[in-house]
Structure formats: structure tokens, C-alpha cells
Length: 432
Ligand code: GLU
Picture 1 (cartoon, protein in one colour):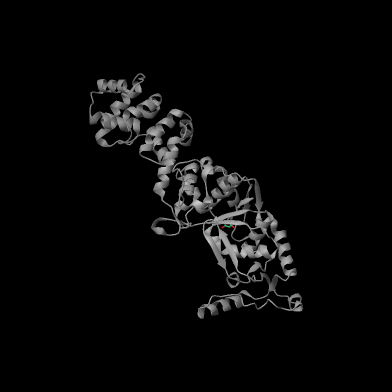
Picture 2 (cartoon, helix red, strand yellow):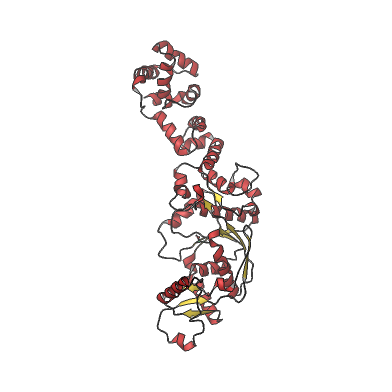
């Protein structure tokens, strides 16, 4: 089983989508099911509606999953396992208040030493625990040996017991911490390979420590993906528009182009432009670079344009709001100038919208418009043009500039001949 474990706390970031894609690809390659686990345990941070949004994005990107869980539904297992650890004396009740802990943390900071839990509650007598009316957390005892994480991308890292520390697994409100819920759930779902962002690398030894304490002996494989950096090499934060999947879709990037780019970035791939199905053939976690990936919107635009060029004209037509494949063909000729669906829609709607005509071309424009409305149907541009020349007496720039605005919606753009070929059946609507 592989899993994608998003928290329903905000808009989906491209980093999360990349994690989802890689998990999906590996589940397909290994022929193992994919679980989508919504990590909703942190009640305060959950945002209503985000779960549906995540599922809709996965569907749009054709990331199929076979299992679906809400982490909060596993609460009884989290509690049972915490009790088991208490019973086995692998965990203990901690009555330290947050003020006490904060003061100790401050003191370590002043003395310039790394803060570690000082074991204050580790060896309390049974009566001290049972008779204690104060709220408590449950801490797992730090492991006796170091833990080595073997990561397919990052290599090996070893963590000393002191760095893992005796950390909290259940909060005073009787809800599990992220590390505990995650470690228990991965174990219960028999997860074989965990692919996630490198910000979780320091959590991994803690999760392994939990599973070991619970007697789980399956070795889970790990792949922690390097972070994605934006321009100027800064981490792409939620504030960068381009880091939001929703924003990219609204800007008119195709899901297949976004997937292509997220698989390509920071990776060595045999092709530059490919489909998700093709990537499943050759994808290899080992070729992913250890160093951060750089997000380059121009590269994404280039890839998007290539995918738009490859679309069936009928499909492209639908994307720009029409049903006729001729409009899809028309849209394709604009791909020389633009690279997103949003830009394409602007170009096409300018053709059908009332025209904005500079004063110098107004007169010519009105003459040509009138002639076009009354003209018979011409199958080719040459005949149409000759008809206009003959009846208007206009030529050169005085003819072509207003004509371009009339049937192209702009002063500059594709060849008039090409525009005409795709628009000849729409002329009356275009010039209305
Ligand atoms: N809910 C965590 C996140 O969204 C999941 C991390 C994991 O995959 O374990 O970052």
C-alpha cells in the first residue's frame, strides 16, 4: 500500500500535488493500492470544504486511489495503542504544564544548549499518576539505540536517541499528535513506501521509534522529496500564487502539463514532454535530484503550450468555450503567441466581441464591416479580399489594419489567411 496523506488545512500546494503524483505513479508501478488519508486530527487547523477540494483536484489530475480514510476515524486505534505503550512501560504520563516546559526551553536557549525533555515525569510512582487530578500528556520514552533512516533520494541519516527525545504522542485533550497518528495509521494500513516532502525527514525517526515500540517489524521504505524553490531561490510559500494548484488551473494551465512539469523538475527524464501514462513506464525515484527543485513558470508555459498543441481540436474548442472543432483549430494558430488557456480565451473572445477601433481606422473599419455583412460566402481568403478591395477601394495598410481588427479582434496576430480559413463560417457573427 502507498499513501497520500494531505491535511485539509489550506489550498493544495504544488509540493503536495507532486507528492500525490509520485505516490500514484509508484503505486501503479508496483501494482499496489493507493490510500488517500485525510489528516484531519488537528481540529483547529481543519478548513471546511478542503477535503472535497483535495479529492476534486486528485480526480482532475487522474490520480486514482483505491482506499480513502479520515484520520479522525482511527482515533480509537490511536488511543488503544497509546494505552498499550503505557502498559508496556514504553510510554509515560507527563504532568508538566506548558508553562513549566516553556520555562525549561527558555533556560536551554539562554544557556545555548539544545532543549531536551528532562525526564521529570518519566519515573513517577503509580500512586503519583493515579491520584493526580491534573491534565496530562503521554510521552513515548526515547529509544535506547540510534535510528537510521534509509531514504531512496536522500540516502542514510542516523538519529541519536537524544535527538529523538521522549516526545508527546497524546495531547492533554486525548488526541494524538501528528507523529503518533501517522505512525500508527501507516502501520495499520501496511504501508510499504512513504513518499512525502523533505520537511518530514526529521519526523521519520520518531515515527520509526513509535512503530518499533509497538512491535512492528516491517521496514518501510522512504523517499523524501526536496523542497520546491521559487524565483530568487526562496522557498515557495503559500503567498506565491504559482504555488497554488487552484491558481495554476485558473490561469489556464492544463492538468497534464502541470503533471508533466512536476515530474520533470529536479529530475532526469528520458523525454521533456510526456503524459502521465508514459511517465509511469520509466519513472524512477532514484533519478530525482537530492537538491531543491526550482520552479520556473516560463518552463511550465512552454510545456503547457506543447500539451495544448497536442490536444484534439474539439477538446481545445471546449476549453475555450465553443463546441465546434473549427474554433479549436483557430485556437491552435494563436499558440504561436500565447501559452495558457486563459490567454487563448482572451484571444478568441476578442474576435467575437465588439471591436475597439483606433480613430485612424474607424472609417475603413465601418466600410469593411458593412461590406462583409452584405458579402456572399467566399470559400477562400483571396476571393474575400478581392471582393473587399473591389468594393471599398481600400488597399495596403488602410485595408489590412482595419480588416485585421474586424476579423482578428486585434491589430496584430496570425496571418489573415489563416484567420479567415477558420472563421469563414462565423463571419457574420464576428463582424456583427
Ligand atoms: N499531513 C501531512 C502533510 O500534509 C502528511 C505528511 C506525511 O505524508 O506523513 O504534510
